[in-house]
Amino acid sequence: AQKVTQAQTEISVVEKEDVTLDCVYETRDTTYYLFWYKQPPSGELVFLIRRNSFDEQNEISGRYSWNFQKSTSSFNFTITASQVVDSAVYFCALSEGVTSGTYKYIFGTGTRLKVLA
Amino acid sequence: DGGITQSPKYLFRKEGQNVTLSCEQNLNHDAMYWYRQDPGQGLRLIYYSQIVNDFQKGDIAEGYSVSREKKESFPLTVTSAQKNPTAFYLCASSIGGTTNEQFFGPGTRLTVL
Image 1 (cartoon, each protein chain N blue to C red):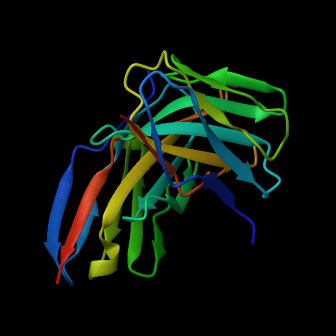
Image 2: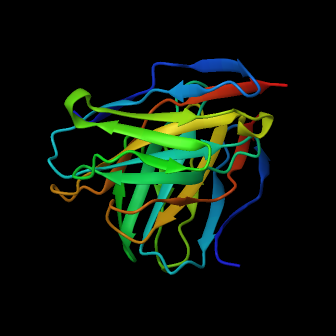
Image 3: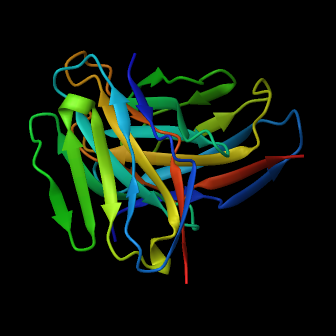
């Protein structure tokens, strides 16, 4: 079955520390997409990145970087030099049905990141 | 501004009453989704629709109903059959299929008294 595991329920770091949020997925599909979203205290999820199963290049966007490894079914997210504004719940998600046509997204349970000043 | 609106932000209802949550998008997206969020459980899919006049049950559809009569609207009704309706409800949309990201509304926090 399709599944996304975010084993870290909550992480606390001090400002300027680097932090990595883990995401491990399971899928039967050969073509799939992975996503990361940020949910600030306001509640609305904000899209951060999309990665398809054929593209294992790491991605860097400012202080954010993502490491996708098909061999370990992982799509980890690193924030460099964390800031208080990074405090939020972060969700990893997997697309389902690209090949089967069911067209759903599977979300992990989220990791709450607290960045302390 | 394009986006998704959900209203109201907070909703209180008495036990046994049906309640309808609004979701409207002006992104011209074909697909729309309803999720329920409970503490520590992430997002769980209630219903989704890939096209007007068609929708499918998600993982926790019991006690909920939807309609998709217009492309821009996907209202969710929480019925009295839903045993534990108090939760945070999020609506999302996407272009279609699952190759693209979803855009989320601000959510509605429903409290049943």
